[in-house]
Length: 517
Image: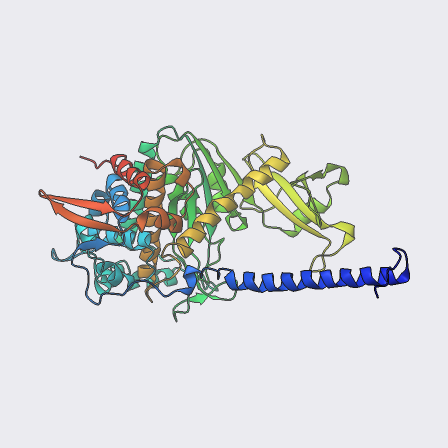
């Protein structure tokens, strides 16, 4: 007997609910089965190429073709020769006693190649000699490490060291030796480089000379302690800020104070500048706050330098009298300096101050002193317990506001300190190769010449986008371009493994660096 239930009865609702639950269970069962099928059908992710082994084998036999890993180095060589440096070396540097072996110009050019290629020690010459195409491209073999070392030794004279020691006054420890004739000649080569560069840029009429010393750490027994406590050397450089060229360098022992005889480097720097320049400026840190240098800069008929005004700004040594004068400046005179800082208050002001040093000439116009003071906000103290950190700049430039003068003076950090970093960290200047002072001085000067050749290459022959490129960038883009050398119809042809646009840059660079007749 079939019993009919009313639609709204409890029995009818129970039956409907059971049927709904059955349908839900069926749906869930189908979903789970479909999901399992989809998992089985899903494609496995493609493995990354980085998880695979390298897809080649290394042939134990050297390539029979003439290949090079340094296809861009001839651009550096072309710049070296285009600036007339082989002739300058031949005229200025005489170290050989016999006519066999490498001549001086070939050796100097080889050191430039070493620095440009990234070498940082004499043994790296051996690696360059193993490049089968390099010698063919530049027209000569590179010297062995032993031959390069002997060349550096020729710049050292023990007698110059002894003479410098004898000239010391009682109580003095540090000394700066005179340069051997060969080393002086190498300095004149750099001067000639700057002169030839200036001839190519006659529109450049202004020169700002930035001067500063830097520390080259060394663990050699002959290296002396520096003011930072480490052992090493402390050479001084002067840079032409508008171009980045190093005008002068002086190698010094680590214990030589930076404020010792800075005038000699300044004179060399201004003497190296092209004769086409019309405006001259000078910037230095507190090591350059030295009476002989100051009096020379202020003298418009200065011996050994350009006539006329040299506008300068030099960090003042903070004497007790200057400190008192800064503290006496009224609060109303201090003006905000620089961009707002979340932790410090920076202000600048004119400081009425006349130094009492007897060495300062009284017949010259008084110098202008501008102070910068830095304070912590909320009256906090600095690490040394002081509330205020005062700095001062002395200058003969009255046309600039106090804030603009400090800003202009601080711009030297982007020139001289940048060049220090390049020569020490991206060229070979940061690793001295010898126990002999003169050999190390020559090594640094050769790094300076290499730096200047690269600067000239960028400014005279490469696209404007590479004007600020450092050596490592030039190596990445141009100098380390591989190539194959092909002999065809009595010609040597270099085929570069590079995009067409970079080959065009290369060819145009060679065209813009003609050799002198």
